[in-house]
Image (spheres, rainbow, N blue to C red):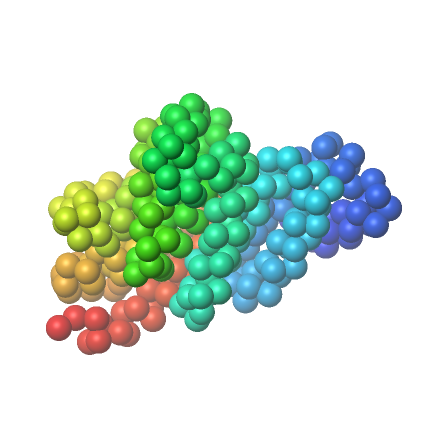
Length: 289
């Protein structure tokens, strides 16, 4: 969607909301909702995105109240809260980021038709949840991927809490299913997430540094290193973890010359990740012994 049309869309949806016609309108305007999410990811000005995302997300939550089962809105909310927390909140306020990741996860579970069964730690509920996951096909990959992303990022921030550890298996099962369906989805982000988890876990809990590197390298190959989220996660969660300074410097050195807008559909991610990589590089003396 062209930026010039975005305010008009928001005004139209607000007007429909106030007149009580929004539920009917949403049912016939799924393309508009999809385009709004695309406009967010295509935004190349991080400050503009940071300022506008909260109001966009609240607008979507208002629309959802009028159509609680609208999968497209649920998916957008899952994507939006995950992206907002990862890009703009996590480094400044991890407690707030955790709450936003949980919010995103819950919207994603609803979008994928999974409810909250996997959140409960009981064996019975985990088995029921896994059976539902096994029934998810390629048409549900978007909802399942963003649910998995939010869930695992929340766990990664709360590995010292029993409640997070109790959900590791369910979140891992979601990621395994994403890998079965399409590991190259979203420029290989499932590879990135798998590499991050394997690098973060101790060996006794299933961690595997060599496998983690393989997954990161697969993701790097898919975009030739130009999807900068891969570089950032590879450097932060693998190179630092394994104290591989040579790899860290390689991943963070030539990022400045990489065009952030080469992949138009993830321009926002690339712009923010470029800044995060630049900041990470400045911390190398503190990160390596």
